[in-house]
Image (tube, rainbow, N blue to C red; front, side, top):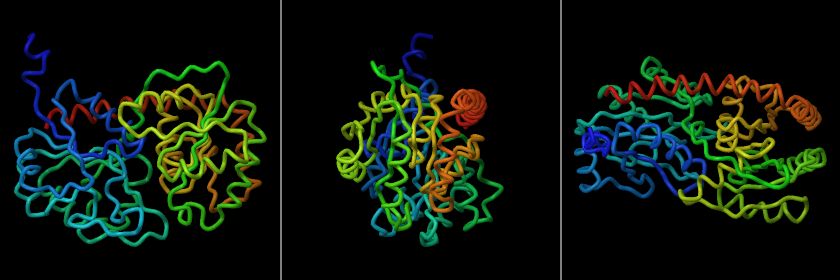
Length: 355
């Protein structure tokens, strides 16, 4: 009994993911580890710049389980538009090497980060998922419309892919304590031409309209280096406090704790939206990517989601004013939706353990 508590008899799991790239990915990776470490000895394997040479493949072969995800790992193109090769995803493994692996595989709540206007996925992505299906992998997409977007390109996989709550919902640190009430503002500053359709100046005007209606302190929490650069400019114009960029895993409790302690948040990126909802913090979502609107719909929060590319600034401001007035109702909704998400992820994790 003592040896079992020490983990001597736990199965070995390799978690294929990206750490120390951004706080949202760190949060969901740490949540997966927390939820499954009772049953597995979890070891991380970096995806970025990993060519999956003989040493990496040997580690995969020796494991009892491979977990790929979560996060938006199955897009075919990097931030500068360069195609990802071999599999059309961040898992840069040779397909023949994948075929030879006998280790059970879980695709854990991955996201299809496909902007409107992006090129179609590379054909290698179809080959990857055909191999995973043939190997009997447990394949799941996160609940932000990723599954539906993926099936638009590869409808033949519809019977083999399920939807689960984004694992980032289950990273729940102690809330940050502040002497004064505050809100969190998260502005996505990467791929501005894709997110704001060449209307970024108009977005800043809308942001000013929102700030004028906020009574609390406003904390800007960057997600990427692009965010940090933009936030320095925003801070010159608006009364906001800019947090330093902290993308190391050891800082994740602090950063997500800031979301958890906020009165509410304003989210233009999926990660800030998810980390707010998971910690029962109302979030006014400004959809600058399809996944933001998709997640709001799944949560029953679509009425407080403003689609910047399709609605007028007046419509957005009206939604925000209703959002401010209906905080109690939103918190009740978050309680209900998190109970549902907790039940869903618990049942999925039981299936993972049984592989």
